[in-house]
Image (tube, rainbow, N blue to C red; front, side):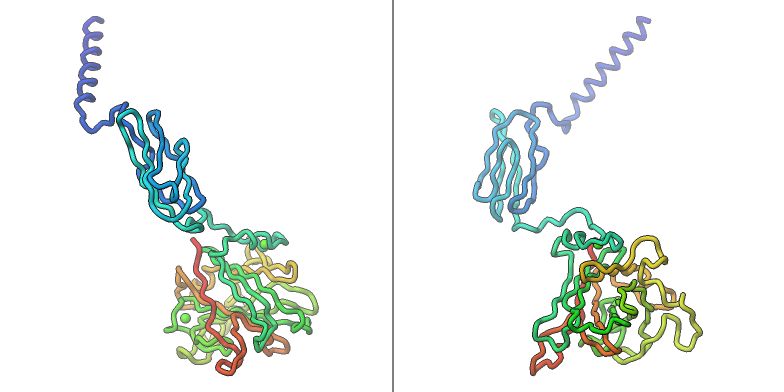
Length: 330
Ligand SMILES: [Ca+2]
Ligand SMILES: [Ca+2]
């Protein structure tokens, strides 16, 4: 037993000796901070902590203040926050940026089965692309549209102008998409100035007087670049059935994760992004950063509204403009 005890003490001494010899090991009484650099927006705070009792000071209180280690951004600029304990000091460099530069960590999803537009209202403005019809547009049938894209969905909130939508027996609504954000693919449609549409979703918003589920046929571009030439997903001439071109929309019993919905005079529509580009026959790759999108609404198969649209002027009669650019939030 004695021998074992001695061995244990010797081992402990050896271990202590070994630790003491490691020069890089921080000493318990050496002042250190949890952060040596931090970036915050104006109005934001960041908490600094020290391993010792310290007094705090800011080199520039017009940029950042500090109280018990809590740093607050006052104005854009740089400041050093100094912690002092006895004769030791430690510094954290603080960079303060203009407000709104810190994106929320979470990318929310729109719900299209909640009978509510509150989810749209809650989206940070910088996440959403939007277009509003000017008062002097040539066509006034679409008032406004918002588009919000995530890695999963393209969510659309569109408001028709009921003064121009008078025949609710069948109201076609088209979504034109430049999937790859490239003018080298896709073709012409007469609603927008950029001839680069790769796919077209087509169905109605109302049918026989009732708002209906937006459950489109999906057509792809088969023509020469910049010319006309729409057809189903399947190659032209190939016999197709409904399953060849469904799929971009979710809901209506196709996938149990959403729907299109008529709420407060607006339609919430959700397209499943991957299905737009992964249908085998499509041949398109969807750009993972940005895409282009445009819309029209019709009466008796004539457009009465287009978005985006510009002012109707002598230089640009009809106010035709390029499709909206939408970035994918992730
Ligand atoms: Ca909703
Ligand atoms: Ca294209």
